[in-house]
Length: 117
Image (tube, rainbow, N blue to C red; front, side):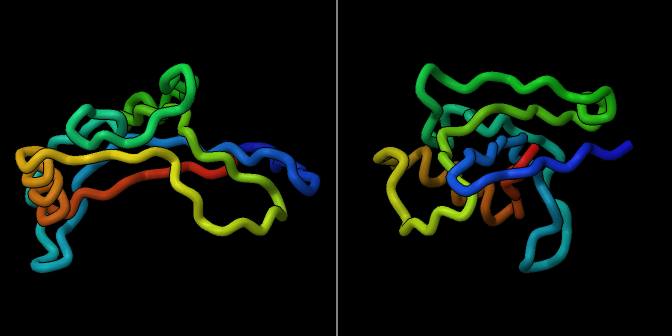
């Protein structure tokens, strides 16, 4: 089943939700190097969080069975608003966390964002 389309007017907010961080085939050898997924807001990644903290978004039964963990994000997207990049927050990574993140990149982990639900 599909989802009914949303009509937007200029400057309406367009939701951007985040999902789990999951392994896909790595570019260097097209092999899957892990089967472990992480919550988007796992402390090691230190991603910027929305004001008041992230909240889970209700999901369909199919999403739950596939292991999705859809949550709110701090991104403020507006329909037809032309903006330059702006920082969400500033983060400093200690050496141990940099190694953890670099290992996940090497293993082919991928972010999953959902724009407009």
